[in-house]
Image (cartoon, rainbow, N blue to C red; front, side, top):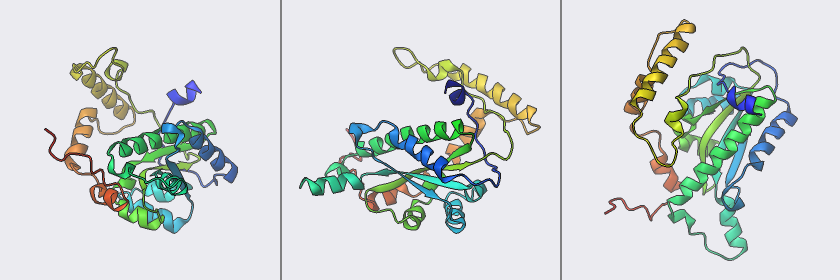
Length: 248
């Protein structure tokens, strides 16, 4: 298991081999077995095999071809629709929609379930790549997948048998992400280290050498506001009315 975790790679090209239903079920079972806040299980996974539906999801995700070409595309949603139904069964109002913490809860639970699914898939010999691009056009995803109120798409996952092996991507030095007792903001030296690792990795692949910092900085400069969630979160019922727009 540790070997699987440490050997992660992201695959964008897949063979034509079908992902067997029992294999897909095992992956989703692993995601469902992951821990969640109050055991509320605030995650729903929607599997998509239909070619036309995958094509549309690819467009919604910024025209990422591998979304359409992967044998299976999974959409991980934070799901408080069931919590709302639980309240109706118990005759208790559902007021969590007004709390910004519900977004943190939902996103956290999705992230935990996503990693469980990734480890399961990789341990079974499949390749994956997470797709945050589903948040570029969440309105399109919501309508296409018929997501009810209180359900929101957070991340996608391409799943398939790899066409060919790919290189591991470099990681930050451990001390950049593991801080003991308190946060250490003196990180510039560590970022220079990953810049060098990134350049060496690209050079070995015959690609243009670029710094990791340049790629990350350019992405956030080009995407100061990513997607349409500011509007669609509210449309899906997440008002977060307790978030003070001008905290004192």
